[in-house]
Image (tube, rainbow, N blue to C red):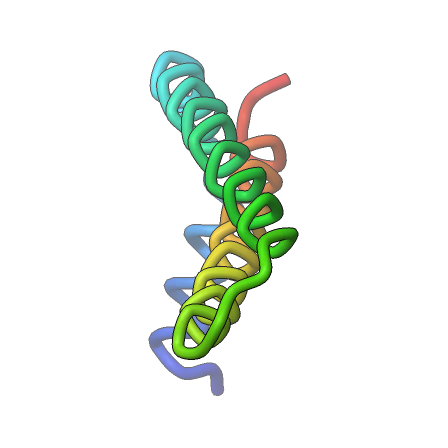
Length: 86
């Protein structure tokens, strides 16, 4: 017997996103990618500077957050592709 959260998750994963809604979500995901690219590039440029403590700690925190945001954005875009009518 499956747990309710598992049943809901599997039901949600098989549903298709209506095309009009999918287009808007795709647009927002694209805009998010563009904003993340600015953050990634800024993080890279900061890593090239000779920073002192505690700035180096802040940069590591920034890089960690950037990597998590990038992973989530890829997951979002993949989900949209998998659940959009072709």
